Length: 207
Ligand code: RTP
Ligand code: MG
Image 1: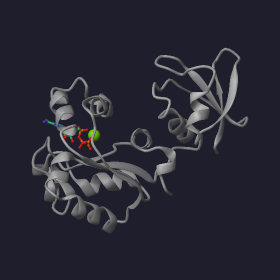
Image 2: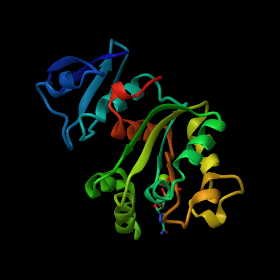
Image 3: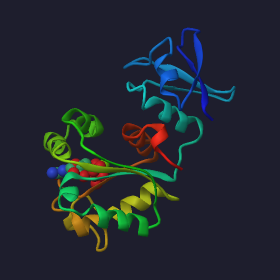
């Protein structure tokens, strides 16, 4: 389903193509911070959201409307693991565990983008350190597909603290510490969808 009706809540309604960024940008009303918009696919359903990033919102809306995908997750190989040359071995483990790579890029997060990505941890004492670390060097971002993707990937990466991670997990093999722990893995289907949309434009995602 590509075409969705966006409603401003004030009687105005527009049909936009979720895969066309320009049609989102050209909406005659905004769905900025704090503003609720309705989303409707055909006549079937109306859901509401107030996501502030217009490029995140279409994917979020699409997932809400099509039933949240349970076969997608998102990962980043974190800066210290990329710098140490572990990317290839980590990607091998991911593929060997049955995940299909739908999108992948080497990129570097600015402090601002890293802060936005980990915004859920804003109040935690390690937030500043986490943002500095995640913006300290290149990361490899990937959108992954497998049945039961989120839970299976969390199992593959192991506990946050490598001292507690099971043998054979990515963190047990490559993490340096609880902070510098080699990889990120989404913690829910909803966050997987948001995180994939945060890093990839729709036309960069294959599959
Ligand atoms: P992630 O989100 O990166 O996949 O990690 P996670 O779910 O296993 O752990 P989470 O609680 O979401 O924490 C996010 C990241 O913050 C850093 N952290 N440092 N120093 C500390 O006590 C501490 N606790 C967490 C880690 O990089 C962790 O992965
Ligand atoms: Mg987490």
